[in-house]
Length: 342
Image 1 (cartoon, one colour):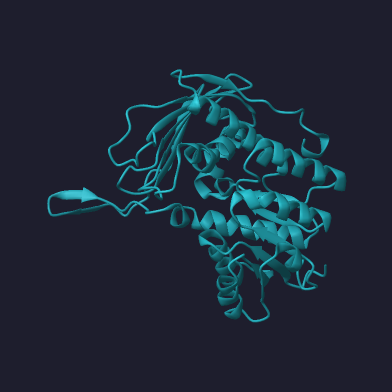
Image 2: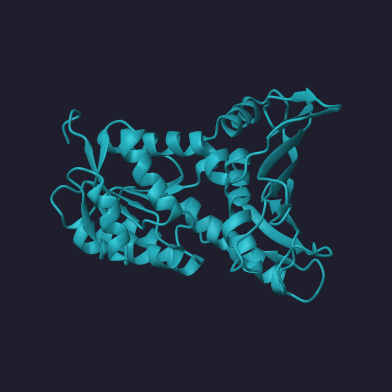
């Protein structure tokens, strides 16, 4: 593709995340334009498309991908719909940015991995946006430098103001802790080999049947221990913290940057309300990196392997979570990593 031509992107799924990506591609990102939006709710897709010159609304991903002005696909539909859209895009050899999860389970993720392998080259970037967050990137550079020695432990905290009423125990793992799974693998450059989920007494603010908060423990292939506090109904805002405990020091990210105000006998600051605001810059960098790489004929960022590995760790976590035995440890089952993803 000539470098001066804007990348024509079809956005599949126009819910909260998809609509935000449409806005991002149209108003923030350079080198791309939204040429198609896809949603089973035709009116919602049409409303978005009508606001963008040269954009067409579709109700079927395959129809959008067949359009001559579509060069690449951004998938932001619900997870169960990802596999079909991914396989359609891979069948057309189209570049894809797929929001997490790659697919809801390891078996379907493996089918996507096998389809990409048949192409012989990578086409899919998975939307684990924390890898593009400025603080996480600085933490990664510091750990990779060796300045602090080996990382022995990681402590993660992941707190939400509240969760939608339809959120479940399993979704705390599959939709929330999955971020800590991916960022742990990335920061340490190690696979997670086992998961143990502990369930303390639930907050009174959790819906009936949900164990919230939960404490999740990862073991890695080189012996690091990683813990995650997931608290879906903390009641005061959205917070994500990480602390690495290394041989020659510790490093922590995620503390609120300010401003810190002192007035009326009190001091304090503001806490972000949700992930869209907290990681807005990370989403911008993620999509821009995908567009830049795609326009140059390449691919970057988290791979299908990363999506598959995260799905496998999620499955182990849910099995531990469901087990009636307290602190039941479940090993993660992974296939041998294919050469394409090494």
